Image (cartoon, rainbow, N blue to C red; front, side, top):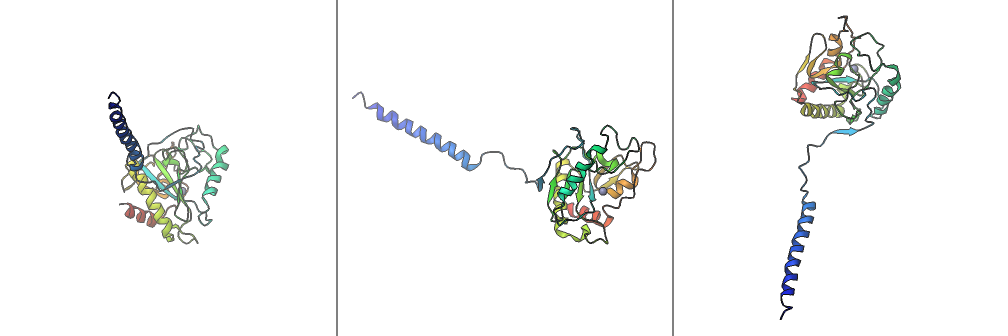
Length: 232
Ligand SMILES: [Zn+2]
């Protein structure tokens, strides 16, 4: 008679065991981890710090560029190579608006190729990069593969790429709370929204108040307006 309680105890353990196992497998299958954030459109590529030396910016704007080159969407590595080649020619301790340094050094956070793919080229999107003199400290650069009106690869003619540009600009706007406006201060040292390199270049001044612009035409007003309309 003394052995009678044993089957009951085993039954209880079996039930507890089954419940526990069910809980674990249910947790894995049901994906109880936090809800995933909106997926990024950015393809992680290179992740180079170049000469940022860990410096970060607080982005209040996005600067749109075209990089006047075309290799059917395979041009992202040319953009990267340009940055790498120029690395040793720039003194990272010189602020580009504090003196008149040799310019020609381009690094950038994002590149959008002709096929509409958006690549993140820096470790974080707020890593400092050099793409627009005055705007480097307050804006994220987006280089667009292609050129201006009248060229064989005017960015405004590439609808697939346009969609890619709009998608990444929207993502950056949401991430950094950037509004669909287009404002550059008179000295070029601050700005808000989505702006063109052309806008920044026209207002950029050296520390001695002399114009620092070099007649940049990217991106043209029509293209900027279309992007602004599409991201509203
Ligand atoms: Zn530019």
